[in-house]
Length: 78
Ligand SMILES: [Zn+2]
Image 1 (cartoon, helix red, strand yellow):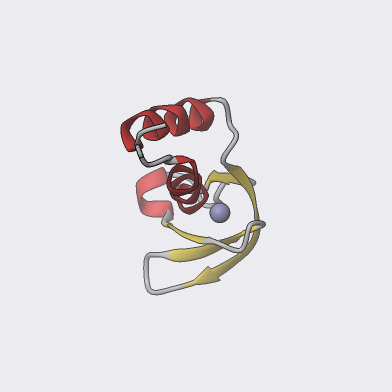
Image 2 (cartoon, rainbow, N blue to C red):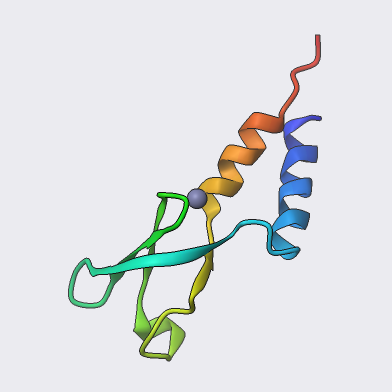
């Protein structure tokens, strides 16, 4: 599929929860932000200030896994 098609498919998969990853560790990164380490090995940033809740959810969407999926599913036209 083309890059555009792969992105649309990745969006569908994200909506379906296919890029949800369990949070395995939470480390303070600076005064406001924490770094969340996900089960896939990727990380994401999280702050209580934006989310209005003291603790992050058990699962996060991993945009790095989504990006990798897109790159792996682009088939260049011959
Ligand atoms: Zn990931």
